[in-house]
Amino acid sequence: MTEIVDRPAGLDRPSLISFLAAATVWLLLMPGVTRAQGQERWRLYEQEHQITLFKASSDETDAYGSPSFSCAKGSGTIDVTADMNDQLRRLFADLIGHDKRPTVMLDAPDPGHLSLAEVSFSEMGGWFYKFDVAAESKAFDIFTKTGIFSYKVADVSVSSSFRPGIENAVKFLKACRAAR
Image 1: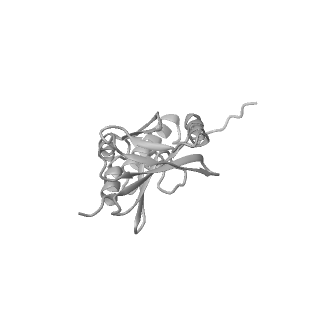
Image 2: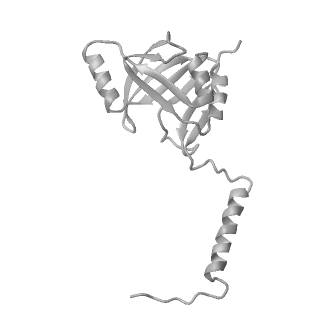
Image 3: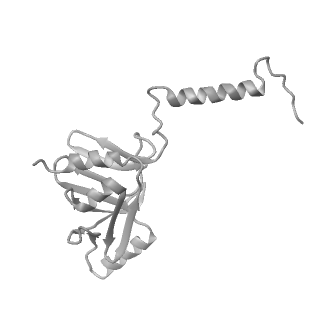
């Protein structure tokens, strides 16, 4: 059964649409409203001696994307944390099962960088791994310009490409690099 409700005067359809359009424009232009909240982008979490760069749709979240980066300010070393997909879980299991080191090598132009991956598990996000990278590496300079970070775990190529909020990667890298 359809119920018919009388609308009060002044709330006809064209007036309502005009009101909603004006309210939307006002909210978008109003100072203090952050349009970036709700949009996935690179974000920073900064403490006195530590800084983290992560992908998320809000500054106040613990649900963030992979990879994420952190460092002790001025340390010159960046810790990279990345989630494992099925292929990487099988690769790590095979490497460990054959008593081989799970190494990570940055793609060119840093072909000499070699790091040992630490495998771990979290109830929130499942299996992940961590490795370190020199803050002076060319791979991070490329990342701050393009949003692309790529490397190999053993012989499997891994690449992340994400640009929104990349200006925060520049701030992050500056904070991580050792003082000269």
